[in-house]
Length: 203
Image (cartoon, rainbow, N blue to C red):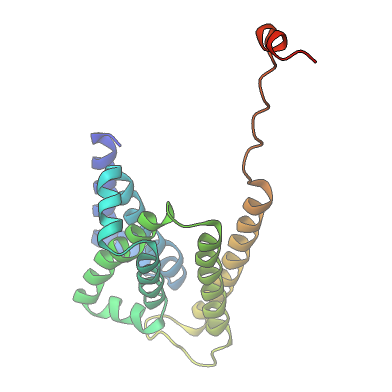
């Protein structure tokens, strides 16, 4: 990526950290969970793309390969989906700062580094874990009889849960579509024999 792309990424990240953007995205549980958190993780993915291929390979090797990075990303993303983590981020500036640092560096960046080396089975494992986690947490938000986040009302909690379930279904449908549509290209046909080849190998 060129210099302008790097500047644009930095500007977008800084904008997400401004009080105006934080207040707008964290005012509702749905935008906090399904917009701000994914955007911060996406910043880490883009950060990985900024690194030269040699640097990406070096980081991947230093971390022990793709598997530890995937496990790290799954655990870190799971934490920030918990109601207690959302409450802590809204009430404690240090936890809010940790969210802005950990989501890009412990979720987006590791997952982007590992993705190139993951097989189809490995990528499927990541997708199914993330989708199932999103659906299960959404159902818990819907079924919980009490407010699980002190900063958000029960009605908002239920609507966010339904959005999480619907989003999980959309992701699952999209992932299945890529399995059916994608595939390895057919091997190129062998070149036709030339006149010299036919003379050297008569029928």
